[in-house]
Image 1 (tube, rainbow, N blue to C red):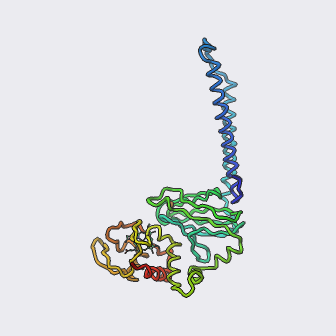
Image 2 (spheres, protein in one colour):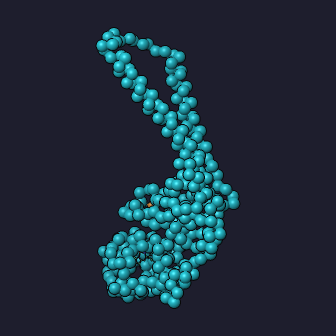
Length: 314
Ligand SMILES: [Cu+2]
């Protein structure tokens, strides 16, 4: 508690402690009073019951005090909530994209990441986008949480104040692999962040694998960043969609407009599977599970993905 990991920790924790304190006070005092009454007014000690007809003074007291207490709790709740609604004008903006069942964060320079990487002590606004169903973005350590409703534009903001790694969860049950929909928030020094932000998938790949097939490594990074691996395994096992292992140049039966037909998984087929997933449905799988990546991936990125898929032969 009161960790200071974000600028909202103090106000949210204060509201929590105030409400917890009032609740504890009443739990203890009501329990003690009950026990005392059982002892004091049982039949042996108090054989003849009194009939009390009402007491105006008491009624005013037991209306006024709880009303005041509820208002106190409301005040602390409001004081913690209101600043979260007032977006700062000078904040850095990051687009947070939720889809079944992964997170992608897109920065102003176009960089994508499956982790939320942020500089320390700089206010950040998250533009919340869901491409399919209702998700909810929750960072417990920062005391922030906001539903993400497809078709609406919502935002949330906070200032990370301590370097470190924190959990980020989806907290709205969103289907089969909802419980896998989590990632990290990494808060780093402003200089380290700047350096990280400048590196795109291609330069990262160059550093990772000197002399190797750099496009393929970049393709793997893109698959991970955009969350394809939430539904497609790389090792032959079936998750929600078919595995990517051995996909390249495979002959398959797909269903197009209700008709079965045979295809070969070449570049054109794979690219169309990414841009228009419901055009061909792989036999044995369901339509409508994969949502188009038209807005998220360009031809160059898709080409790199294909380069990587070529390396996953059986
Ligand atoms: Cu979700």
